[in-house]
Length: 217
Image 1: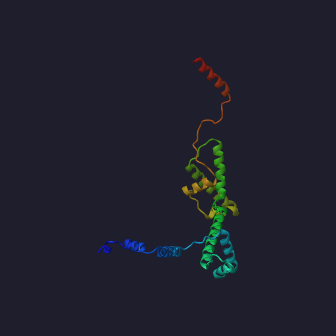
Image 2 (image 1 turned 120 degrees about the vertical axis):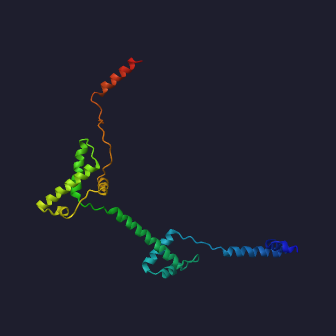
Image 3 (image 1 turned 180 degrees about the vertical axis):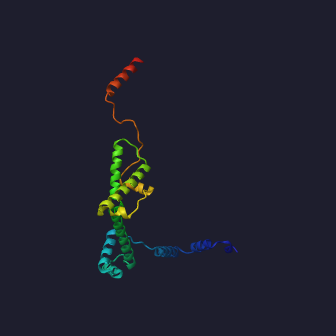
């Protein structure tokens, strides 16, 4: 009756205590060996080794042959062909990403009407030199005006460089304006009528101001 009230763990512990010292040591040793055998050691391969494996695979094009070649004379952890497959996939993916980034960096967005935009930039430069504030609507209106001007010029001269103006259409949308401003590096600025230059007689004005302050003391 007493044993029925004990848990399984208590029964095992009581049975263990009834053993002599030699049998106890054997039980402990068996438990330790059993636990260590269940643990799978994860082998970490160095990046240089992975690079070497991928280069061998690139030469022979076979995952299994690559693994066999790497395992020759290797007394440590054996390399499975699945490792080669994974490393090769990772390597190729990295190389592809690098190539895509290079293409994105080198590829410049095509401008549909570069002549018109260049004329628009020159026009804006003149307006800014005259301290005139230009709104988005004024930009768009001027762009449409220049587009029509270049279209008429092509019809009169048939200049091949301006052929796109006769075939295409231009709406001067908000999206075009944002892209044009970014391409032209035009920033938003608030126009002011305050001169940024100091007055020619600023030294005498400062002296007068200081004199008046002294009189008030």
